[in-house]
Image (cartoon, rainbow, N blue to C red):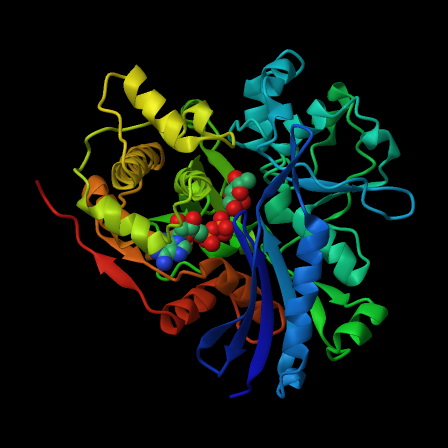
Length: 476
Ligand code: ADP
Ligand code: LRH
C-alpha cells in the first residue's frame, strides 16, 4: 500500500501542537513534532491571544519536519483551533490588533443587549446555536463602536487566519463558522440578515468552504522558507477543534455520547440533521456543524479549565503541581463532599479559582474544600455529575438510547475523571485517543487527498490506530 504523511496543526486554549500522521496503508501513526504553550494574555483589562507567537511556533514545527528524510511523502497540512474568536484584516491585509479571547470581560451583558434587538427564540431558530456569552455575534456587537469593524476588510476566524498566512486565501471553513451564531443551521449559509440590525458589516465575511476542501499550495515564499515540497497542499479540515475531535471518535454510533475533554468538555451526540425546537432551546443545546454533513448536537461544560485555573493559582503560591500529582491527590480526597455547578457564570472568567470554589461551597452551605486534593476532587466530582445530567438530557431530547460514553482529548488521560464519569453516568466509558483532535484533522486530510473514501472508514482507521482504555461503572 502507498505510504503518505499529513501534518495536523492543532491549537487548543491551553497548548498547541504540530503532529505528523504517517499512513502505512491501514493505520495512522501519530508523532508529535512540536508542542508549545497557549494561553490568554492580559493587557489593560482585556484578554488576547498572541497569534503572532503561535504563528512563529507553527512555522518552527513545520521547519523541523522539513528536515525529515521522507519529506516527499507529505501530502497536505491542516489546521484546527478553538472556536468563535477572530482576527480582523485591514486594507493591506494586516491584522488589526491581537484577537480578543472569548473570556474577555467585554462580553458581559452583551447577550442581554442583543435580546432587545433580535429575539433569542428567532436567533435559536435560525442558528440552532446555544447561548454562550462569547458567541462571535455577541463579540462583534460588543465592539461595534471600537472603530475596528469600519477599518476591517475581512473577518477571519482563528484557523482561517492561519489559512490566510499559509496560502494567501481568505475563506471561512464551515464547522467553525457554525459557532459564530450567524450561520443558518439548515441552509448552511451566512445569515447576514441577523447582523444588519445590529449594525455589524457583512461584507467582511469571506466565502464559506466545506471541510475537506483543498485550499491550494503554500504561499511560494513561505514554501521556500520552510523547505517543504511545492506539491504540499493546505486542506481546510474540520477547523473547529471539536469538529476534528468528534471526527476521530472510534466506534461513534447512535448509542454513544462523546466527551471532547480539554479546556472545555464538549458533551454530545452526532446527528445527521439539526435538532431545533423549544425543548432543545430550553436545554440550551447547540447544533454545530460537523465534517461530511454531520451535526454535533452538544453542550459546552466548563471542563478542565477549572483545574487549569487552580493549577495556575497554586503555581503563583509556589506549588508546582503536575497533572498526575493533582489527580493522585484528588483520588485520596473524600468523594462528593462538596459540589459546584461547573457552568456557574463566576467560573467562566479568569481569576482565583480555588477562592471562587470555596465561596461557592460556603454560599451553598457545603464544606469548603481547602487542600489541593479536596479542591480538585470537588471539580472532578462536579464535572462527572454534570456530564451525567447532560447525557441523560440529550438521551431524552433525541429519544436515543445511550449505552456508552466515549472520551477523547487531553482529559481522557485523567483516569479518576473517567472512572467518576462511568459511575455518575451509569455507563461504561471508553477513553482515548488523547490527541483525538489531531487525528480527526489528519483523517479529513486523508479523505481529501484520496487515501480514504469516507468518514465511516476513517473512524474504523481511528479505532485501528489508537489504544483505548475502558472503565466500567461501579454500582452503589
Ligand atoms: P486544549 O486542547 O483545550 O488545550 P487538551 O486536550 O490539550 O486541551 O487537554 C488539556 C488537559 O488535559 C489539561 O488541562 C489536563 O487537565 C489534562 N491532562 C494533560 N495531561 C494529563 C495527564 N498526564 N494526566 C491527567 N490529565 C492530563
Ligand atoms: C474547545 C472549543 C469549544 C468552544 C470553545 C470556545 O476548544 O473550541 O468547542 O465552544 O473552545
